[in-house]
Length: 397
Image 1 (cartoon, rainbow, N blue to C red):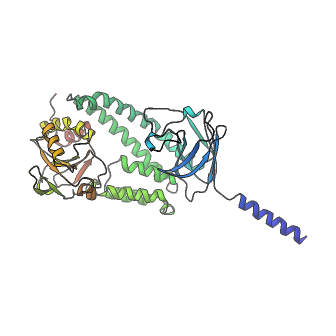
Image 2: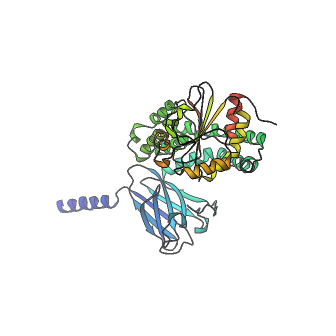
Image 3: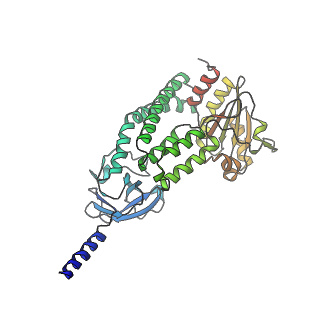
């Protein structure tokens, strides 16, 4: 009897080991060739993989904390350059549960890198409580996101593209930006309400990341956002990413005073940014480079703004991150920018990047009379709206 009892205990222990808690992602993607690798991506890093057979695959492992991953099928195993690969799939919140990942066919899966191949196929994910909550949030913001996207598409056609060619449909652009601003406030409210209602869920961290990059926040607001996530999640990689992201934005947070940096003027003389920021009036600092297409495309609008406000309340300063004086000077001659032109000749190793954490251009800062940030990354009609609200409407009809 003792031997039988002992055997049952051992058998139970073995079954417990075999049933160790973890994730099992059962995928069904009809039409997928056999032998294609399916990757589970943590951002850009593959952390798990499997092979397809008869349009099916199985990914299994364990996560310490549920997080947003990407499930992608590699249809181009012989291609080594990431952006040239044909990877198809979607994002999925993974927790330690049995998850079903299904879609109609391989052709209905969106592409990861091929932005020309726009597919709105439906992927169904079931079995993950965390993913269910994530989809609840996505559905809550879906309508607002669609309105904003539609307004943005209209803005590109109505204002942005013509402005790059010197035609300014100012009133139409302003109306569309105000429309997008109103929708953005709705999105931010949904995000804040979701985080408040779900502070212990990893989904709240993902929503908070979206809020950080979508809303122009003060240092106090960013601190409050970090504190709003339950302490049980503070060691999670996603929370560390959230904390790092807010840290990178602190130098340009709303209400922070601009940082003085060493630059070169057009004569080659070493100067300070503080030499050109004028107290008592609004200042715009535009970071750009001669090799940056979007930067150059924005310059006609900057000239338009300077004509309207440059003599009455707005001091403009362009700071290039070119590291070749010849290229910078050639661009200045071509673009005819009749306001202060400075350059950080150290490029990506200069103080623009190290102090302001600018990781891409164009990037702008709008400062008040005390040199404090009132807006960042505003261009086109976004800038027009702020100037009208602060300095009155000086654009010609």
